[in-house]
Length: 215
Length: 272
Image (spheres, rainbow over the protein chains, first blue to last red):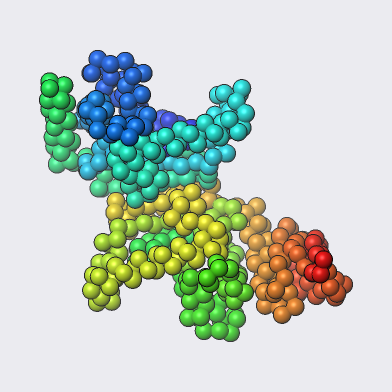
């Protein structure tokens, strides 16, 4: 019984790992769905929502209320999922959205650029290797900047995660097995106390969002 | 069978994790002993080797010959101990010393500064300020050393197979997690990898022998061994090439286990 968040660069195998963990542990796995629910909650289109949530704000962007409400909506949606029990979340910023919450195992998945380029070329055979590399670097940079601006954190800093796994050597299956052992440790179990904290966290997110929407 | 290296900052629980893994796997555990073996081999005090493995390089970032020699000796001693395919090493620069070897599980352990400061205060009776200053200084010196000797950032997670945060795991819990990873086929020292390990062992012996010999230590030589065949590459001045070639070949042939020597040296004109 636990919540696992997976942070990764694009095309780093996060989705495959989440699927493996979901099958291995019997936990539901969610990613984009959380964003879709948050968008619905605010009555916004997912595209507009993704734009707000994923692109780096400009110089004064950090201060915009709209962006803060969007993030709060995602947090609320993710918190709701957490109240239902076990969960594997492979969407954006899980470790930040659930920061401070007990019973959460925060995983960072890394993979060599060549491996990620290969994965991109498989789905986009019209791309050249250099285009694929440039695309991945751009997305990485954009996300790193976003995390820096929104949370003041360095996305590659291992101290903001519990466990970092490198897919250069681990297969998805091995990463999955190792994480299954990690999440089995007592401190990641959802005890009654932890459950109460999760419910309180979700209620607080809901209330804050309702207040913000009502203003 | 598996070889595990644990890289950690000073006072980050690396030794305790290594001991736990050693007990669970039934493998030998080595740390500073490797450095002592290397020093004994060279006939110098272990402190000298330890200092060179940690001290900041010179002003221009060049690696002095003595540092190259000591690093080569430590690597050779480490690989000698790893030849059986079972080892947990928690000493200096482990993952980097064995970075060309496939199948090694390279673990990095990180721990919050407060945890490390507390550990040092408890064991050495230091005050908080001195303990923190000491840890920062050692971290910085190691980081500079790795950057200069290997051209890498030792805090970069990409250099490791896994990074564990001791803020989230006790040493015992971390031990279970690393044990699970070590049990996976990716890190199994199979016969093919043991063969590569044996070749790597010969490479380390050859490189050390080049640095110990007055005739070759200033040349920029490297060696790759495949199935006992040693290929020597590098650059050497176009002076007494026959004599120098013979000396290089003689050194390589003197390493037990090398079956054949091939020289692929670029001879350059020192007075163009």
